[in-house]
Image 1 (cartoon, rainbow, N blue to C red):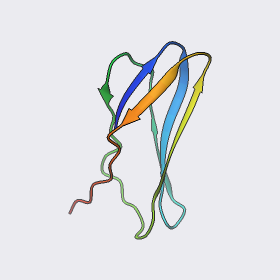
Image 2 (cartoon, rainbow, N blue to C red; image 1 turned 90 degrees about the vertical axis):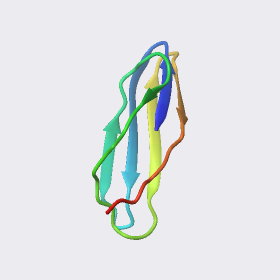
Image 3 (cartoon, rainbow, N blue to C red; image 1 turned 45 degrees about the horizontal axis):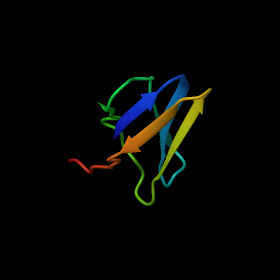
Image 4 (cartoon, rainbow, N blue to C red; image 1 turned 45 degrees about the vertical axis):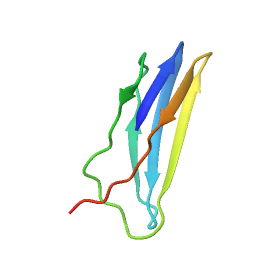
Length: 73
């Protein structure tokens, strides 16, 4: 994922929930400019995965681009 946040972004998280209900969460700190973020080396149960982005902000914003799940091994 690449992200770009501005102003008073107080908290952001990307959560991946697998088919068995297991979750993995990436905390995204505020930054300026596009920054690559990665939640690496996680195992997911077979089936559908749901990606959720949560943001808490007074007057800031978060742009997310290039989200991907990559199968390895």
